[in-house]
Image 1: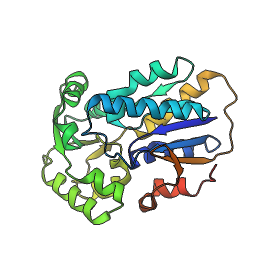
Image 2: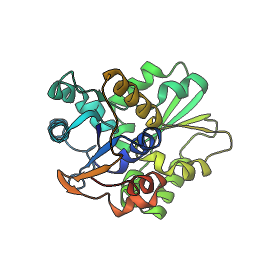
Image 3: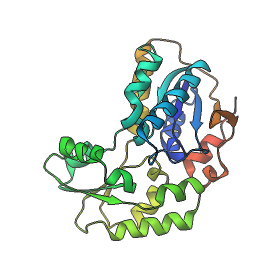
Length: 255
């Protein structure tokens, strides 16, 4: 079975790696868009058209499940993708892990891009899932871009700046961009002891597997990884090797 994962950059690596660990027999189709990354600042209709078109191409290449491990793609285009591919193709989106964080922490910081931090989307999630906790947004300027480039020093500088803007009393930090789990250890090292990190990659992978199992089909595959770069066959960027998740996927057989 082929599972397609769609993001503009390396934000798809954490969920892809969890799928690889949990079900190494699955064939993964990783669709990145380096020619147009990042998607966050793009107009809404542009993002819808890009994500829907990418999903359609993935299904045409044999994908039976589509995953959007990207907050921008999920909030903007998830329902459009579902309409495009039809009910027979499960489409799984991504939501920042605010609900589980607020369930166990009285004070929560959400680390996200500047655009997401200022968005009505994040404000709505806080209203819906904040559970009475104190929730503050922290804009992580340049962190996603540094991760896409594999620029460890720039990522560290962005993390240091975000940590300095995080209240001292937070009990949990939500990684509100799917890129950020790739540098979770570095983030944790800049936060006080005892602060818990929350991200959604493992949960999205688990939900994907539940949807696969519900199909009742033969889901075995060859465990291959295929990469599309802005619609053309390619390879994961060299920067992916800077992260454990990237190295895991780079070591998989290609298709």
